[in-house]
Image 1 (cartoon, rainbow, N blue to C red):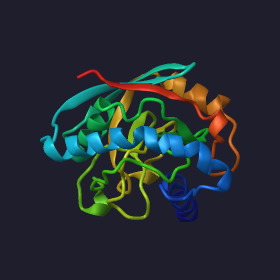
Image 2: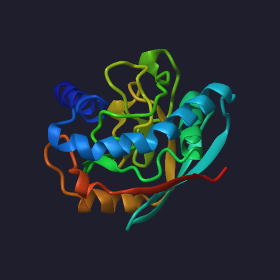
Image 3: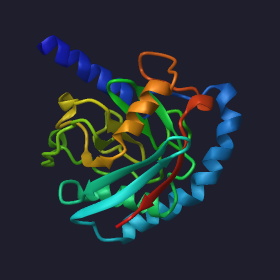
Length: 220
């Protein structure tokens, strides 16, 4: 059992590492426009995060996915105020609109929110990781439907990339900042996992096959 858990933790680090995937010469040209298009959004979102007070209580957002529908998510700022505030500010600035889910592992999770679509990008803002290994109490377990933040091996490297857990993955507890859960639309997550072709065991999705996030809207 210890060996299995250890393997899963290694897999998790591979999946959620923001810098795990680099750019190659074929991708650079198409992604330059993507970087430019989100630059002003990132700057505005960073400014908003610095100027605003931390949120508290429950907040609700919808994630519209092209050709699939809407995923409704409840965010809990009492559990992860920094993470929720950052996510809400980015969403209000339209940062996520037009981005994609670039890493998908059927039976595990879907990951998106990277302006480069490679797993290496984010906004200009990096935030403190709100989880036990980083000295922050966070009792939200990574059960099916939970939304959490991707990061590198640096505990305080989370930025804009997030993932939605498709199947219970409590081996991630204490290592990643869970900050809410899906209230409606898990069937969409399931369908995305089933439909999307991946290139390797790390869930890499080619740019042309990445499901598109039409809009992330803050409801309240």
